[in-house]
Length: 156
Image 1 (cartoon, rainbow, N blue to C red):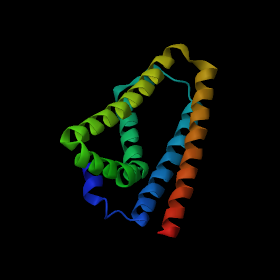
Image 2 (image 1 turned 90 degrees about the horizontal axis):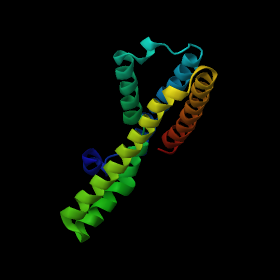
Image 3 (image 1 turned 30 degrees about the vertical axis):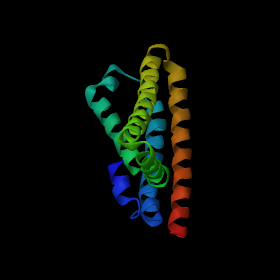
Image 4 (image 1 turned 120 degrees about the vertical axis):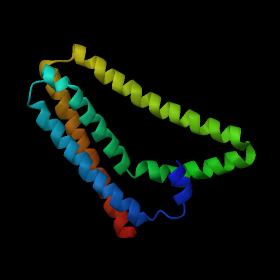
């Protein structure tokens, strides 16, 4: 958020396009890895702490390489914060950031909780199909992000 406020006038369409393209390639790679993992049956070793750390790191990388948060904060978030700071003061600005962050983090925690509890009732064929479907969805998302990023680079 702070980086978006500082760089609101500095971020070019080309820069967002490049970051987005790298992110798109990463998301496609994640989708392919997801589909490959569907071919391997889950094991107790698959739930190791090293794999959990690797999964968290993949999520962090995907979020950093996505241009959408930057686009949101530069085009919507910063102007809203400026308006709130002008009309409602610091309290309204802090309330907006806290509410936005709580909803964002809360939603991600809810999805993570659902995925974690689904391991108890999803196994075998249903598990493999779910991994394949989510892998295909990630590849499709990555391709869509790539197309958007290339368009930004061309328009840039």
